[in-house]
Length: 160
Image 1 (cartoon, rainbow, N blue to C red):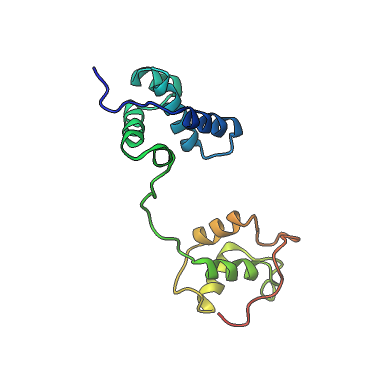
Image 2 (cartoon, rainbow, N blue to C red):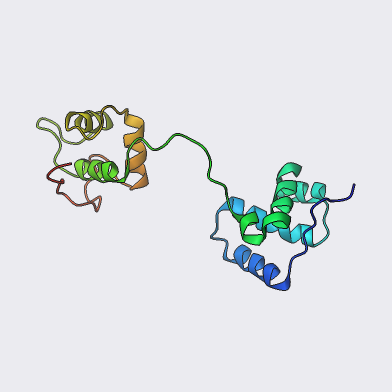
């Protein structure tokens, strides 16, 4: 079967892709797309590329098509994925981290995820929230309720 979208890289594009792979610091999907393009340019079939990279043939076909229609950079880029918007915006996240770094409520030695979630609601930062978004924010910031020396500031904003 004849390929509909051929990959013919320029020497500059080939060098860009090789440099990207050598650095190895890009996202895994971006690196996979770079490998697809280099192998396609090298004359490999979609089936050979898919097997070598342990991916589906459709991924190879989509990457070649995107390169042919939109160019190298667009073929390497990831489209935004649909999904729910974050439960906490940046300001609310900052407030949560500051709260987690503050003194826990009287009678407690440390903050728990449940206490933090309840306190955010009590202070009017959010209408409602479960512990999972709280956990994810603290994980992202490498913060942990009750852990000392988290590096975040001790003070809370005066008003939200």
